[in-house]
Length: 315
View 1 (cartoon, rainbow, N blue to C red):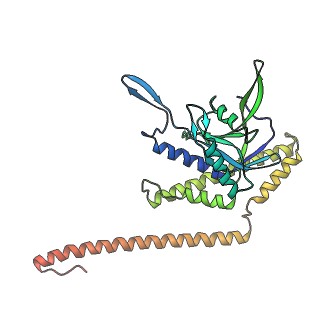
View 2 (view 1 turned 60 degrees about the horizontal axis):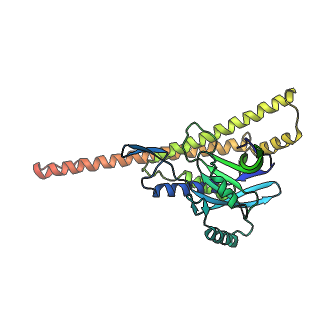
View 3 (view 1 turned 180 degrees about the horizontal axis):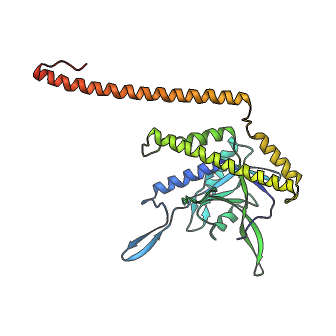
């Protein structure tokens, strides 16, 4: 496998594709009995067997405009690992259905799950070459790695290399960017705010939400610092001046919100004060509810004593 692609294509990946692949893997994993979260070992008749995590397969669809490939959506495939064959009638039917809804979308390649591309993956890759002569391969790594900061998604292209005098197709890594539209941003934000399945409290959900916002702001700050150091080095002459990069940096900076205006300060203080007021009202409501519960308990207790000894109610 080569280190990087030399095709010069620009890949744009939409979050819907990542969500769909993750959902596909989660459903298959939950239906497996027992559901293996990772590669685990089991001992049967004194022999240790390795249980591999399940793999899922599907096609990715989108459009290609010149040298830019944009991946919008995906659908599942039926694959037989024993024969390394695809269910072609199922693939053609799904392709026909998607053509009716998205007439401008084409099959760009396929996807799977795993830590790295395997030799058997080339069989699926070659099987799709009659639909797309140069399909791409999207690989999602479902293994949780807390130390990893980048998305566990890799896009591969296939290139013909001569190895030991024999021409062979190999997978090469390609860089990509995340492209979103307004509907996807709303959907991803909704998924991020779903209530935890373990019945977490509102405070837990708020803490998770604030932690996500803090991480996003921290990442934005680090990227802006990188741009600042780059521009400073270019101004000092340590880095050669490139007008194309300067235009990209200028376009990016114009997207950042301007927060130094007087109107922003007024709006920010007004929203901040409203938030504090709502917080205080919520605290008073909780205190009133707690006091009401306490009074009800006292009334119930004194009512029992009054029936026995003729005492009056507390309130």
